[in-house]
Length: 495
Image 1 (cartoon, helix red, strand yellow):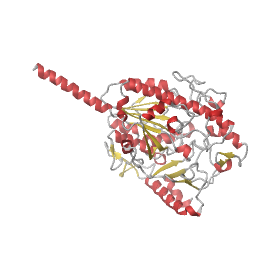
Image 2 (spheres, rainbow, N blue to C red):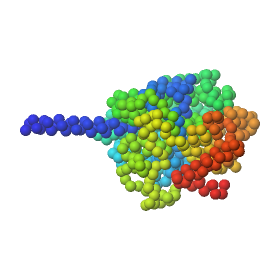
Image 3 (cartoon, helix red, strand yellow):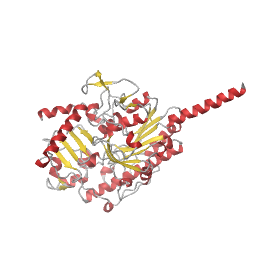
Image 4 (spheres, helix red, strand yellow):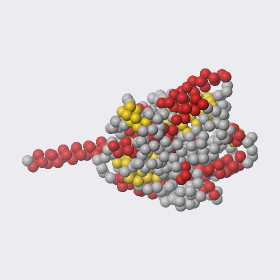
């Protein structure tokens, strides 16, 4: 009897250990930087020092063609956390202050789905979406602005908890968003998030860059003002890198690094005119580095195109919570409105707009899809300028729905010394490969051949040689709007 009892204990312990290990292999960490372009060593940048992220990339899968769907913080984060374009989920622009945008009450978010599937969910750092009833996490570990060390320290109890339930950690720094404690006399460098100034962050060694050493990308003017701002940005990027290093080390110390899916992205590109708030490549193209548990396919790169609408379905697919045939949550029958803002309709299944790219993680050489889409409507409340985009591997079409209006500026981008220096020179002043006037006043349609013209400098929309391409992409764009319940699809009829 005693032998049977002991055998039962041993078998029970082995079963429990196996259950816990199986659960642990489903852990998820999603890290989101704020306004970080692909300005990292692993993406080929020759100046920015990012050794921790570079090392992580050597153990992970790096996406060369990953895109935000809108280069605006709140709107982009709503897409990341719902798998729905923001024109349908209702987070049309910024959540905070008088901007007051929020998602519709019927929307479900990634943490909600994961909780239904047995996950423990926690967030720490920048949040910037609403309402909390939609974007609900079991634990709110605090904000901490740009202080990644404090964020990670707050998350350590979650990582160390040997629960039989896997965890989902959503961790977001406010770096390298402009105005964040750089060592500078520039008033824009004052920390707008209430953190310690002059770069005094515990555990972070500030890395200063000289303006003469920066690399000015083609979409920006090579001016002293621009170089000074880029030097500050590089400094912030190096802070992000060190914070990521601290996060990865904490996962290793807790013994969960090898059991966790780790995703590193940014909400969108750099906070400079010509990138943030635009749908040009520097605004949408973003880093995406994913490490599967055990480092499977580590060190690989992929040219497959993805966008941030794909993140929620991908993470649910990894967790075993996605019906890949119907692109729906497999633990509950949910419905969504037939039209945005309406009541849920019993005959309208709750389908994600994005598609899982788990198959790409399992085979980085897979070709992926032939097009991705972007949808931007507001940034701040004063900035109404809806744009819709279809981007293929070669051609890209932008529809500037409110094109008779001058292009609006985010308050921080308008005040940026880079922009002001050129603005004061007049509409004919150069701004990258455009003029100031071309930046402010845009046509209804912009068509670019990204192979021949990667900097989007030559609009082909009025070129009769590309009339068939224009017609084809317009049709493709409108179909996308119809399928994703975009209210602005109506604009085809009367504008």
